[in-house]
Image 1 (tube, rainbow, N blue to C red):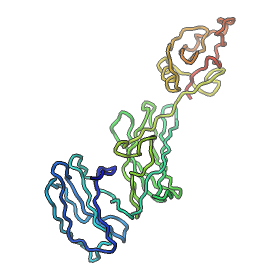
Image 2: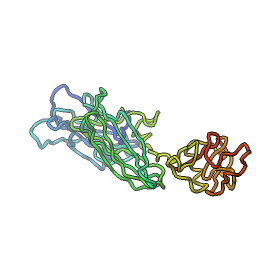
Image 3: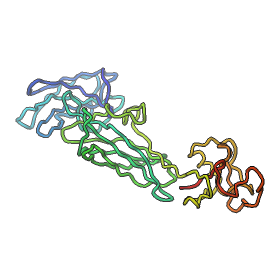
Image 4: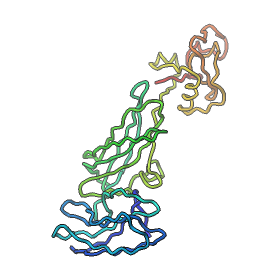
Length: 318
């Protein structure tokens, strides 16, 4: 029985009330659902870390393995040996950084703040802040966190890391992204600290209902900031914004701002403000600049003097 951790590793351990010298470990798994790699580790109290005693990379599932343990030090390990198991159906040759065991200090990611901000007319930057706490919810300082980022639609990954402050907060520096990419995808690499073990099974749910960096939710997405705003008077330039320059971008703006369009975008109207505008929350207009005539349809109900209005707002680029 049992379940694998976030790295698809299984841990089998034994605790002793006092120091024991373990000279042999005997291991037998099932041939149909066994493992391809196993490790024996012992807790080293001097460094507060788990140390590999033996590694077997080509284990044959279903065959009993009697492992004789030889120590290079004359000091017996104070902790219990722990066997690390890698399922044969999903091999993983990465070295484990720690081994969960009863009584060991644990840490997990308690909070995620993922936002984005425009940095220029052509780029934006994802922002990521993680908070790490121990099992009693106390913030932890000097925890090193490493994550990977890749642009939506691309395979290349960028690895970056940070270290938590006294409040347990770790601000990960992510690079500027060109506007042609609408999102980035974040995945977990590792979390390390002296004398404490990362326990991803206690992570916060992010997004809601999904355990952060778990097997079911190994990644999450940071979306580009909305580049569009709504104005209800005058023109985009009067508010310090730029006009939307074509019909496709007009449709993108409406969608980005949450409007459900049933008509348009259409243009060529002499009584409709230049640029991108909307009427009745459903009818989308894109009028090239210079088409609208302030003297057109002055007595008509739709007259706006070629300006944005409460009932016919404009979409602009921020």
